[in-house]
Image 1: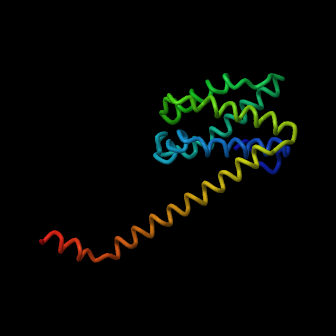
Image 2: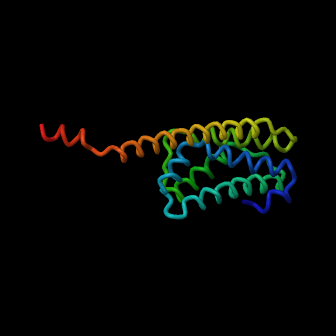
Image 3: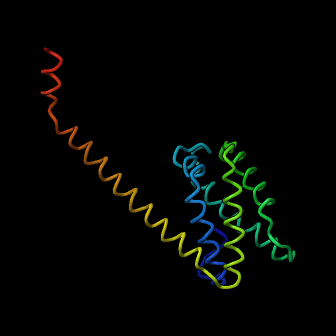
Length: 157
């Protein structure tokens, strides 16, 4: 990401963290990462997307411009298309852009409520995902330990 988080102003560090949380909740992007639609370096491209979004906001601050969700939507669509081969048709970029702009406004005033909420939601998703993986692995272990005698009998009858 854009340099070590420890050297950043707390507001900027919170925003970087928040961007990462928002992207982790974006189903289209997470599917692209999971299935490596962007090639073997898809995970790195996802991390770079965080940097690009943060840089977008940093540039606006330097220029003393106000972030507009519609401009961010275009950036998101372009990056998803170029880096991940995703052509969104669900309009989810609008919600992602809106949330990011709103969170940016909050973070610059020291309000980290949305970032904290997103972190909690991500933690819950992560725990749920870990539980599902554990159940899947347990089922696979059970299937592997089955000697298959039941299926052999069924096939012979």
